[in-house]
Length: 227
Ligand SMILES: *Cc1c(COP(=O)(O)O)cnc(C)c1O
View 1: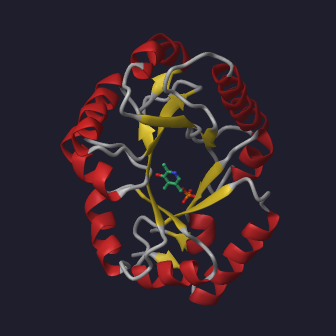
View 2: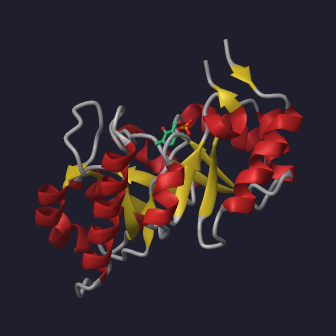
């Protein structure tokens, strides 16, 4: 059972949060498990970016919402290699590229189809066995290989904080993500870009935005609890 908010409350939440955000921050409405009628409410309130983490669910919703033709679709979940081609075809952004192997597979697909969505690299700034992604040293070691994937459109870094951090710990971790981004921007890559920083969810976006997030991914705070 889900306990989503009524449409008027969703409208209020979105309006309030949008009013607080700097214009440079893209608000992605995370709609996993959210029904399409509530997504239409979000759309009429001004949302144009939707984030989904399950491919089959997302494709069904894209079909139902095909009349809303200016939506930008973000795939925010872990991408399995057997779903890579579909995800590349149906999303404008993929946020959680989490291994060199996956990146190289996407590079091959991008070459074949002549198109690549925007991509972010998922980085773990703190050890978290429950999450995918590169540690900072592992990422640093593999960036030259990633830079050789010339068909990819890598745009920046994405991170998810482990559960249960204090605000100070969260702030420090977001600051590390911003510092890494700034550092990597100063290096002479052939293809890699580090303009984007996808970080901040319902519980911590108030800390991620001042730290320099360019994209925040909000679900529960907009729509209510999923279960
Ligand atoms: C579910 C999810 C979110 C949104 O989480 P909320 O706590 O509902 O805001 C953001 N990012 C990712 C990767 C998610 O899977």
